[in-house]
Image 1 (tube, helix red, strand yellow):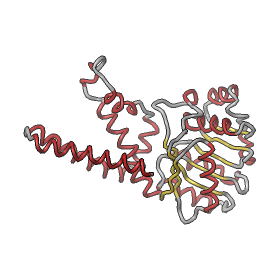
Image 2: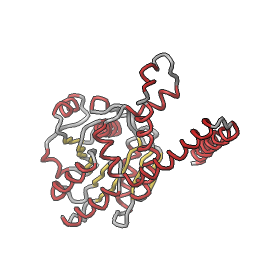
Image 3: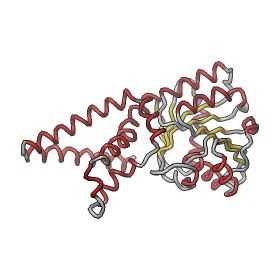
Image 4: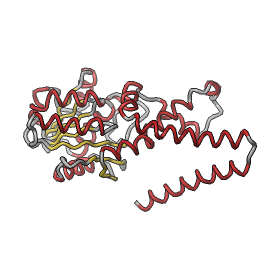
Length: 286
């Protein structure tokens, strides 16, 4: 891999640029972004080498770090420009509405010579933009690779190597459907709950009364509403399922507390603790 194109130089795109340069500074990085300030900053910091759109045709790897619809639009408009045997990776937070559409676009453009893999880096910060990007953001994090019958094993191996070089320590292979179902709980519902929780009127009086639990619960409420609204709506089927389950679990707490039912409350809390312990054990085993 001699030349990489990064489309979207925000928090994640900028972090990938820095991580790639940290791994091998000789790799040439071309960036594409509408924010010229971010491009200029990256050039000054030597995170990228240029931002000439004509260089897309020379890139061995093209990494798309855009919102879902913008990802599809960019690939549709630029599929014909990709280098033969290039590796094309998108990192969208939802997959069903992306993967099959991109595969259709590449097929209609007769670009079967392009290796396409849809991935999801499970890393981020409660801030966004190139100025907050870090080379270390991916260190020891999870990296998800979605697999369909049309994705070549050789392409998956290339994606694995790329992820390892950027610092990821745990790589999972999944399907677009399984990805979206699980992410609805592990990422998207967590952001929804955090946003709902912080809206309590009591929160305005919380200064001086908070500890780790409040910080943990509210951290991801500081989000990019434009991106997350698009992700939520594109994964609404699975999110609604998780919201229904969550509401039922909350209702159990309401019923037990309102009814002053200590035994029921202890049972509910114990089941939550046991589930957390089970997950911790699974993490250790993996």
